[in-house]
Image (cartoon, rainbow, N blue to C red; front, side):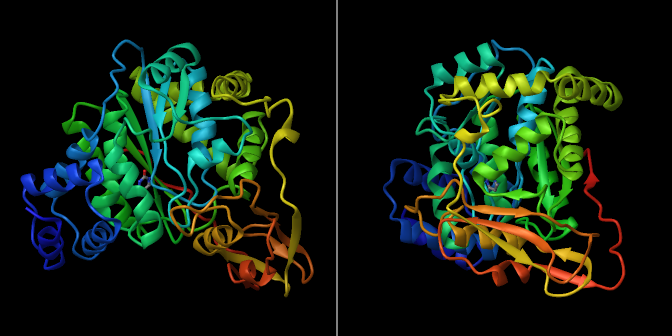
Amino acid sequence: MELRELILKKRDGGELTRDEITYLVKGVTDGSFPDYQLSAFLMATVFRGMTEAETAALTMEMAHSGDTVDLSGLSHTVDKHSTGGVGDKTSLIVGPIAAACGCTVAKMSGRGLGHTGGTVDKLESVPGVKTEFTKEQFLKQAKEVGLIIAGQSGELAPADKKLYALRDVTGTVESLPLIVSSIMSKKLASGAESILLDVKTGSGAFMHTLEDSEALAREMVKIGRACGRRIDAVISDMSVPLGNNIGNALEVREAMDVLRGEGPDDLKELCLTLAAGMVRLSFDMTKEQAMEKTKRALEGGHAAECFSRFLVAQGAVADPMEKPDCLPNAKYQIEVKAQEDGYIQALDALTCGNVCLRLGAGRMTKTDHIDPAAGIVLCRKIGDFVRCGDTLAVIHTSREADPAWLLSAYTFSDSPAAKRKLIYKSSF
Ligand code: URA
């Protein structure tokens, strides 16, 4: 068998056999395939898709491409994963909330992907924080702190680590089977008994329509249930950035605001829904009971305490909840001013994500180093009325940046915008 044959078969719309998928994932894992051939295979998959059987086989092979973690010695283990968005810092908030509710959150996260941010990059913007652990360290912290967020080590789902980095820079993220196998291989390998998925929909998501997002959610839920996990999904809006801050350290700051009981309403609402979903799955509660427990953990400050313990356990040199100045700041702050009077009708998440990439908050090539301080703070959002000259946003950067890049994300009108839906569906 040769990878070239598999590329041709997929390019021509064929269905790969289980043996061919096993061969593919083995070669990805042991590094025997060159990036250019894998990239061609990924692009063929973006255009041709995969059958359900191929997607399930790819997911299982990737989940077993390295070690799997046995969390059976821990109680109420739960994981959460987002399909990727702009300003999506929910893992930094819902992890501590769920842990403060008595769950064990043992989570494997990714780096930025395409125009979207990644939890691992956000965490690493906190000086000292590391995200690579051995299996023993992963289990120890999960047990002692109730919360660990690990990046992909060479040990867990290594095939996804390799494909994820390639997809990030080759325009091959937007594919249902590639997203399903990437997310579910990590979730299955990292062993939690309950899994909550946050499937994004809209311009800043990898699935732009509600229909495609629901199909993605259904396929992941189906695979998770077939593997004996308690799993559910929420569909949430990503046509507008979530919260006000976009960019790694800026998002850590906003996550801390929410944990302190402050922060923007959309972010708070989604985090409470997700955290309650995790608690409900873990403790087999009603939605109402889970929401009550979740709110108590947030409002009583227990989640904030858990966040501090978690960061220190992951190596933070200082606790940013106490010393926010330890987080990096960008050299320049450039105001973006409105060029006309009007109501903000739209604020395109994809444009905002792409501006952040240009600022260095994400990677253009596999070897790029990101700037942890780069990003955008949105001062006005959809529905707000602004006058010409008002500050719409502030760009945080260490590079040259043009406010016009971000202005193209805004649409103005004479009448107020209709209220936007944040959560389209909260169970499957
Ligand atoms: N998150 C992942 O881990 N993988 C994807 O493909 C998309 C989002």
